[in-house]
Image (cartoon, rainbow, N blue to C red; front, side, top):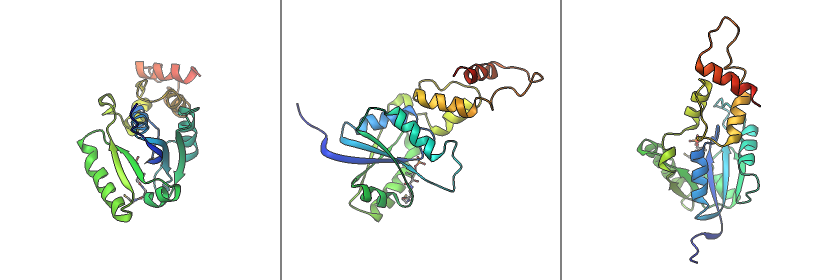
Length: 191
Ligand code: PNS
């Protein structure tokens, strides 16, 4: 059989991953068709207030990929190209869902190339079924009582319940229950 993967190759997949979605997992799957290992590298960004701490995000990714030795998880701060060089990766993976992602990604890729021309950015397209999925929307929908099943791995749903469970339950008997808050209450107690 023809081998398409580069022997011993490592690609870095950087991001905030707050939290990971099935779109991210789809990109990792695709990257593993081309590279031997993918290292998901979470940016430690003190200027952002994420929902999940960096440690929680590492745990979530570890759990999502338990038993899969081709997927690693790490954190980094500072320049991405410096990190990639330090860990021996010459490829950065980024997912592009739609044209709207392109401009920002293109700018980053060209800046990274200017910073270190030896590191190549490879764009991968997740399945169309994930083209509208983002970490931000997943958090918003869940927080408002909507379902995110099928959009994130089970570990993320569980962690979202842990984070938001109490917060999205009605505060007291005076609050009228809607279908959304009833669902949220059930989810909060389901663990
Ligand atoms: O998931 P995100 O938030 O879109 O990921 C953005 C990320 C982490 C890839 C980007 O912010 C990044 O690489 N930051 C590191 C700082 C850096 O290298 N900046 C200069 C190149 S653009």
